[in-house]
Image (tube, rainbow over all chains, first blue to last red; front, side, top):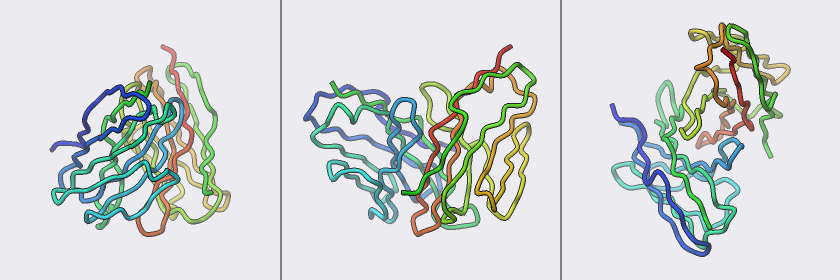
Length: 115
Length: 113
């Protein structure tokens, strides 16, 4: 049973560029959330996707956008990168309904460095 | 802004000791409280979780204690081992609609051999 997979694992971008991160959820899961984890901090909620729609957003600017595909996989896009966007980006997979609804399981993350 | 406050920031114990990590939340809009363990360079892994209608839950060497009236919960690691050295995060799940999770700032635990 494959867990949550994310790609790429590491990437370096220049200020002002755009980046796309990808996530495949755990088998049987239909919901994907994205979190940003700065060094030495806890994960911060960016947004959640269910049924190909953004259901809730955290306190992140519109430069952060996403998408969910019919197979439940998801992308996180960040435009006009700033140095402060350097962080570990975590994809969290869950099943919205059911007795254990929405327990989230994280992937290994994508390390983004903006220079 | 809903918050989850976690302490201590770091903790060092001897092998076999019982580290205790504490978290407190500020309102009652949470319905599920998981703990995650994170090793360097890895994503957080679900360790154990509790619902507010339960005061204690044990899974192996890990125990969560929950005090609903005080809005506090804690993680105890029995017979700690060097392999438990990691960063631990508490979290709280918001009850509204999409189940957003709020995380604590983390506790870096080091277990000495």
